[in-house]
Image (cartoon, rainbow, N blue to C red):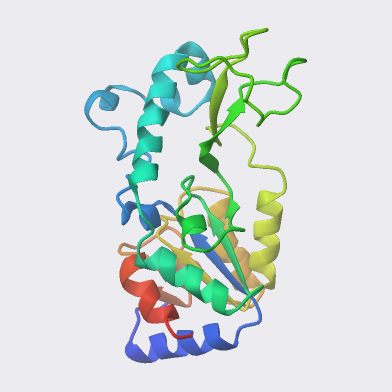
Length: 252
């Protein structure tokens, strides 16, 4: 792992221009530049009195559905107001120039990558703007079809009281079916992997850099601060996504 020079940037641009497959993993730092606070940063003011497990677990939701629903409603409004930053746009433009080359994997639950042009992003931690039922029941055959819910905080099934919840992955829950397997396959097959805006502390996503490294990919990490997976990188670009990605991707 090395700090970057202009020659390193030029080498990375060449690799991205000639790669057969590129995998990108993004984390909370990517969205933070668009004004979406990280999970813990979002617990300010009134919400600072609550344990994260109260706000991001099934047990916490069952204990106080209205409180958790209201917190997510506040976060959803922040996501809707936010706009893709220069990093999102650079990734979207690269994908449009090279159809089928880029697999984008994100730990973020917002839709900024999609709005920037990466519509097929693999979302490991779900979608904060999507509603789903808390549990399956005979009245609701689809977990994501909540059209029959009675409005409320949260909405609920008029027949059995089944609650609507945000479509995110809470602590202790499984990742969406097939998402991690697809991400691991993309990491294994890629020639270049970019890891952007993540501390490398959240598993299993953090292990994707190691998968790519051991399979022979060139791994570059873009982050203002050291991460827990810097030892898997051939190159560390100390900067933000919006500051670095356009320099790396524009015109490639």
